[in-house]
Every structure is written in C-alpha cells, then in structure tokens.
Length: 309
Image 1 (cartoon, rainbow, N blue to C red):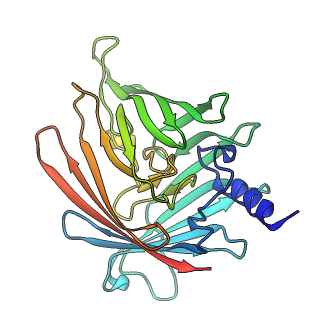
Image 2: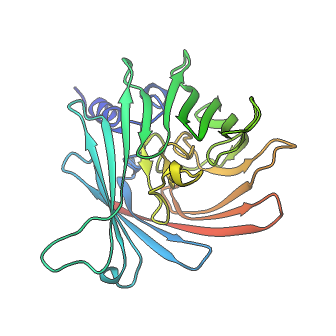
C-alpha cells in the first residue's frame, strides 16, 4: 500500500463526520493541511463581551485528535477548565466526545469534575454517521443521497409538557454546502395542533464560500469554549459548537463559509465572516458578524494557531 493511499484510508477512518470520504479523495485536513504538514494547535475565541477563551489541541501517536483543553487566560488556575476527550472504536471511528467542566478552586491532590456533556456517534453500513446523540438534548438522524452526500437530518423529542421536531434538507454545489431548508420547532402543551415556535439551531439559509482551505472540513465536533452543557428540560437551547456536532454546518464545506443568509421573509440572523490567511491558504483569523432581525449585531473573533508535524 503506497503512502498516499494509506494517508487517505487513515483520514477516512478518523473523520467520522457527515461528509463521506468518497466526496474528497485527497484529504487536506487532520485538522489543518496535510500537504503543508500543518495542523491546528489552538483556537482563541475573542467574544463580544471582551472575554477571551483558548482551546489547545492534543493529538495521539496515530495523529488523531485526542483531546481539547479550554480555559480563560491569563491564570487558568483561577477559572473553570474544560476538558474534551475523543474516543474511537476498533475501526478508528469517533464514537464519543465527552466534555467535562472542572471548576475553580480545585482541591490539592485531586480533580473534582463539574458538569459533563457527551456526543455519541453511530454509523450505518457504509461507514457514514447515522446519528449523533447529545446528552440532555436532541438525537439527530442522518440520511445520504446516491452521491454519498448528506441529504437530510431529523430529530424528534417528546415530553409531557412539550415536543420538539426538527427536519432539515441539504444542498451541495461541488464540495460546499450551499443551502439548508427547514429547521426545528417546539410545541408546548396547550398550543393548537400543528403549531410550534422556533428552536435554536440550523435553519433555512443560503451559504457562500471563499476559495481557501477549511481546516475542519469533514471533522466531527469542536465545542466552543464559551458554550455547551445545555439541558432542553431547562429551556430551548443547543450546544453551540464552533464546528460540527448537531448545530453547526461549518464542517460540511471544503471551503470557508463567507455568508449565511436566511431566505426572504424568514426571521433569522444573517452571519458574515471575514478571514485572514497564511501562506498555506489556511485561516489565521476569522471575524464573525451576526446581525439579528432587530438590526442589532455582535462581533466575535476566532484566531487559529498551527503547528508543523
């Protein structure tokens, strides 16, 4: 087996995402850029409230993303630290991401864990992700078309006081997601049959892209250091991952998303991204401007740091 084929097969086993490996036969991401031998070392989130969060990436000897450590500088000993651990099955497919919040102060000689969240992955016979279950949240099921591309996603949740139903359709142009149709609604007890109110998450939108490398294309889930640990029994909410998981489509495109625009007449936020890149055409900085229907807006900055391997 030649080295290039071995690299391809290894990536297919590791990706575990919603994009079939047969959709991108020359994988560039580990996450990062394989030809440039660069991979993501850390992400720095600069949020609208002037809070900074850093997420450090760790890899195992096989080159798989094994864990994330997120904290708020400058003194991590004085703040909550978030540990994310990835687990793989015997076929090297991601089966679980477990994330633990360890609050401060931490006792000497031991670690006391706080809240825990889990993503659990299941696969169909073709090795594609068939479902993602989020602890205390929704379980999404996925179908694919004859081109091995993601076609639809659905979720159903029932409770004596409310029910949640989600349905999404996906359209790709080349290797980029260009449209989502649908969304998720919640119906509370006493509401007229067939009615619902909006639930956070992916909704109808059109997407445009740059022509540069998306370092997280095809990967599973990268939690935000500023969100997560949700429980739908406490109110409508989603994990708010930076990339992937159940509520971010940013891992589904080979290139980086520039705009996310709802269809005319649809009440939802519009998102615009601006990037700076390095010589390997990987993003080093992303500015995200979210404009809400009432014309208010927020600005978040994400910085990417890479390492050679």
